[in-house]
Image 1 (cartoon, one colour):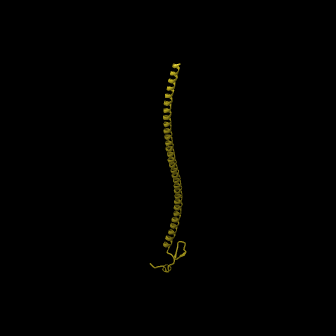
Image 2: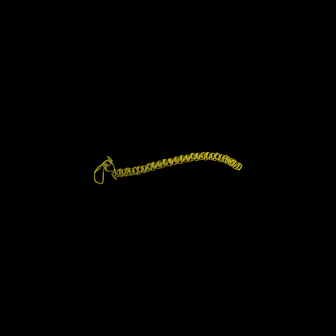
Image 3: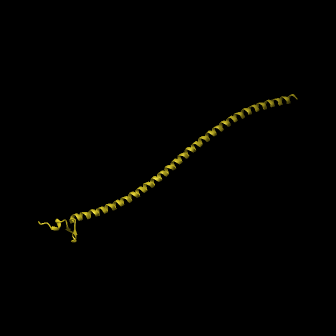
Length: 132
């Protein structure tokens, strides 16, 4: 089969009978590759959009988690301070109870002493009345 002199020179006709430097199948593959590249770039753009949304959502969740963590730390610190306050209050009340017990003991001793004095005075009065 004889070769076309234009083909030997590297010139070819496409399906629209336009003169091309590339062979028709190479031109077609180039066009297909160009379309695939465009599709790939479009898909990468979509992927970046999706990933951007995901990153944004994860950032929001991280902020919420940090916020809740701070609330929990605050609540724990408040609970510790309340526990310390109760412990201090309990110690104060125990000291007050001990003070009141000591006061009660002093009053009991004073009552016994006054009861003894009253009994002695009543006895003295009774003897004085009997002597008259």
